[in-house]
Every structure is written in structure tokens, then in C-alpha cells.
Image 1 (cartoon, rainbow, N blue to C red):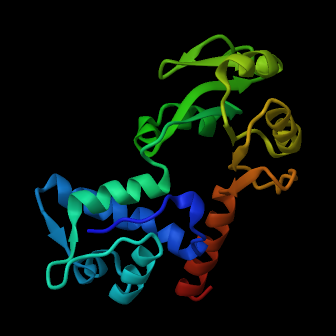
Image 2: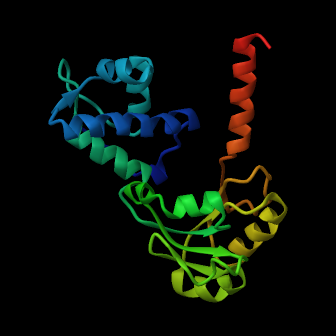
Length: 217
């Protein structure tokens, strides 16, 4: 199986990029079962994406299968993990160690996808200087000093909405280059800062709306 260039040199459409982790999750299951080859048709049946779309998505990163055989599972897993950056270690910090922030600190699964959460920051004196899942929680006021040692490139934002922009500014001032924003607030950042918005509440609104439509409300 041929594999191509690194992800940094390829402009991949975002819908295709969002589907790649689906493919990876499935082929990792196959690898664990000892399956050696898989076709786009087989992947299609399991994740409900058209086989031609799967082949097109994989072609963007120059992954090609063998005629009548398909993709070599082990090589496909390696290529997808490398392209997606899951095989690397990206140091991250969490701002806001409430219920969601604490849950993310305890989610050891993030490390399997290259996210190494190394510290949390909060204003609550009850949790400052404690550890969650072995990860230290600091006073948010100490971030500039602690960040000099941590050198985290990713900030995870789980603060109350009225603190979102301020926390975002603090992260950027400390050298964070990408922000995973879990708040419903649309933070403002310089153009060279990567922002990924993941609002649970927005997804809830969509789900409730679809549910009400299904129920005829």
C-alpha cells in the first residue's frame, strides 16, 4: 500500500478530514481481530459512508489499496494515525476544572489520540494544588509562570461563558497556538491561532430540534 506526504502539505476538505477518524476507529478494530485486509466496500457497510467516498477520502492522503484485496489494515492504521497527528504527543492544558474540565482530565483516552493533558487551571481554591487523575491543578493566575515550564501548545477551554474571552487571551499570551473551545461563546483570536469550537449545548439544541420534529411537536 502506498502512502503519501505528511498532512501539513495536503489541503484536505474538512468533511473528508472529519471522516478519517471514523475509518481509523473501524480499521483498528479489524487490526485487533487479526484481519489483514479490508476493502472500501467493507468499511462502507460498517460506518454507512459510500464506498466511493471512502476511496476518494483516502486518495487525498495517497493511500491506495490492492485490486481485489483492498487496503492492508496495519499499514492503513499507521498511515491514518500519522496523517491525523494521533501518533504524536501534543501537550495541552485545561482552563476551567469544573465538571466538564475535570472529566476531560480523567479521560485517559485522549492520550491514545495524541492529546497529552499535563495541567489544569482554575480559580476555585478548593481544587487548586490538588491532582485529578495524577494531573496537577494550578491557580489560573500562575499560568504565565507555569506555562514557561510546560510549554503547552494547546489550550482546552471549559470555563464559564463570561470568562471565555479572558481565558482565551491568557492562553494566547502564554504561547498557546491552538484552542479547543467547549464554551458556547465565539472567542476572538488572531488569525494564526487555530480554534476548534465544540459546543455541547449547540449539539443539544440540534438534537432536541430533530427529536421534536420526529415526535411531531
